[in-house]
Image (cartoon, rainbow, N blue to C red; front, side):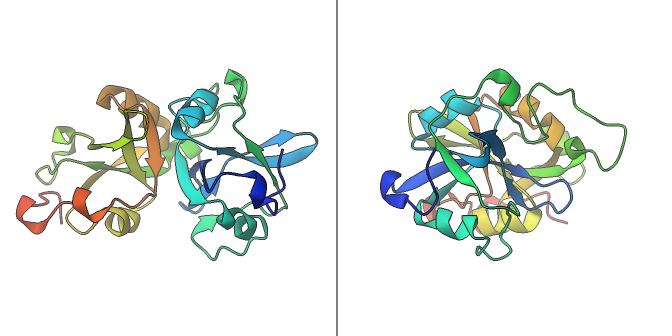
Length: 213
């Protein structure tokens, strides 16, 4: 385990396990208990992340220097941060009972009986354009990632979709509890959360966005 101030012991950037917060819709860092302390789950490569957390755990990629800001809750309002000082667990493989998904713990059954259940939290998946009212015709757009993996691009809001993919990107809302199933159907290897696409991968106005209201 590493203290977030000790960035010299960490790679230049890390993949952090995260998921949408059911109460605010913001990005929330996943934490677990290790050595009597709460830790965030950090990985030095996407390959190690998928091996350690599984394909259904969403992630964000951040510069290591950002960890110090996150640990001191000085990151502004971009993410929902833990209200406590945390450590960094690096490149650890989690047992199945400690792995997570966008809706909660991977071993838990999805909960649909209350509106407040985390599984109902909407996650917006970048997809192909589709006619208004025909969301069933949408197909998730996958993006290439290191290690010949394909990522499904998920966002916590339509504003986050536009910020990350531009104004011409179609998206479809998916309950967090179903995101793992959608990932499998799409053939994605992993789920990327609230991550901006480089300009050359964004759609232009000539391609249309049929699901705009």
